[in-house]
Image (cartoon, rainbow, N blue to C red; front, side, top):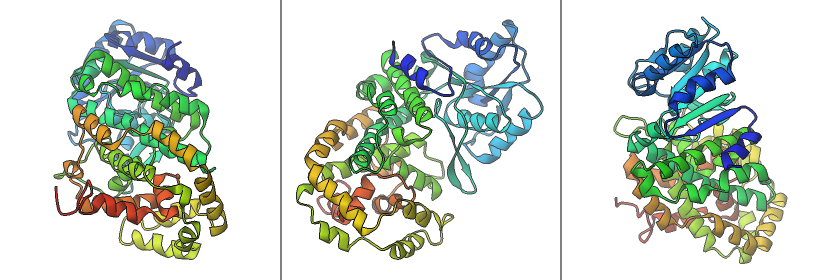
Length: 447
């Protein structure tokens, strides 16, 4: 049984997934099997309607599937914002049709949430291997000035025609490759959380994401060139990430500290030359940043960790409150630092126990992490080959801002990552001095 077929059995919401060449023609059959007797409504933007929506409209007609008029977003600047969800909700409230989302990240997330808010399932037809959210539980939507994940079910069925995905713009495929590459550092963060008794690894979710991960990332050149095998492996890997999140009802299997960089930049309304940066491209820089941190962690002798010194610099809960409120003062999200860090705070007694566990088991933890992490230079080379950004300046982030992100990102999520290890052991400032100092890979004052 294929990895996808096995993962599909564990998925709580997605009942069918078709990946392969020349598969678009199977959409009407898939729709009939999953939604017998139902009416359809195609949801697309102007680009994806031309690409696949128009063909599906005719295919559905000729196969006797009743349809509402397609809903086509006309705004060329469309992104996953709540006002666009409301737009679609108003359309869906006029009928009982099953939405057929034709597009990639934005269209899928908008349709996913709108379908949920109008109490119906939906079908997704992917048009680019650009992210892992197709089959994921939850939609990532900007609301009230911040990127938020809204709980809503994954599509009941999903179809990915590799011929269409292979022909997608190279930057979209590169974005998907970077999002998949992030599962390497996300996995390392989970290994740490598991080893320090913070959050145990769920073997099913781990297996779904990690078992074929290195293979799926093995051909960045082929991926960039739109070669069928490479794009198929990438697409499968991205879909599996979504299934793991469905299984665990959490993004933990697919998202670690590297995603916290992306989330923070979204919350700060970061733009590059006035334009939004794709999720995958943000995550590309986040992944390299966290990989660099892991490279330093793996060179650190935690077997001789000075625990009393680490405990000395650990704030009380009251001191943490002051710190966390101060760091996000004058932002749109002044409370988030306190809200998230207080949720993962432990007192000095528990911290001492945790650091002792690290010290006693570092040899084994280090071996597990080494097996998981792709070294920085290799990760950078692969991401460059596929066409993803590899320097912060490529997405309009200064080196000073990247350095600040290492500090700030730890505050915005309660999930335990290497950033928490760096803070708890007292190594964060030392590692940042190494990364951004005169001999560092992001030496300040240079590009």
